[in-house]
Image 1: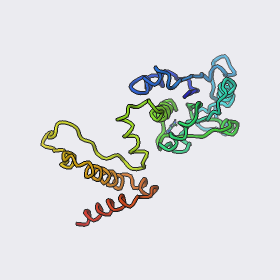
Image 2: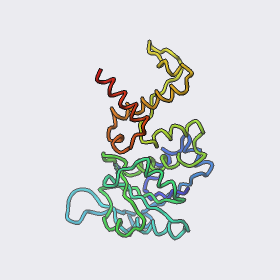
Image 3: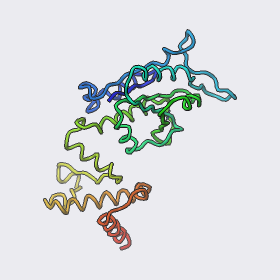
Image 4: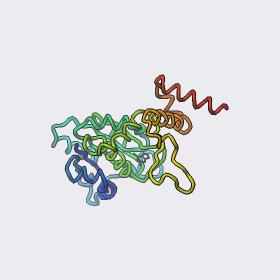
Length: 247
Ligand code: 6GU
């Protein structure tokens, strides 16, 4: 998988992506990071790529040509069908589902915004592009968001995670929050591990974990439950929990 990242701060991405499983995926070339500096295509000697907004107001806007020329250069050098991702707080909210869709491409262009945002015509002039936001808050630039996108896609590529880690993935992909986890020691500061997890009864453990997942999701992220159809067993566990609340 090749990520082309249009950014003036490539070091900021490398700093965050060089560790752990993602760092290893870079080392063994499962993923390739190709940085393009849009300043190369600046129309002036200072290398600036932003200017004041038409209509006035504070802040600078990123110009069309430096970024569009960067995108065209990448596309000219590639035979792949490339998806372009513009990172901006005005984008569509990023989700695990979107990560799974991006994972199907062999090559992606990520455009990291700085300043107030992009000249709107840049979005109109780019084919096969989406605007993505990683949440409802404002970052100083898209670089951190780019790292989030690259990490979440890379860990979906077969072989990047060990087998025991992949299971964790399934849990979120299922649209529910993960169940709680416990490890040694059995008692810590007077707090015990739930008995069922020590029982060796795999069926009971599976049922307990699923119920915990449903309870957690119901309490913390009811929006996720609304989006998802519950199976018969899941509905039963939710009803059981709601009954317990009434008691
Ligand atoms: Cl993608 N960029 C910036 N600058 N801020 C954000 C964001 C992106 N997603 C959430 N906030």
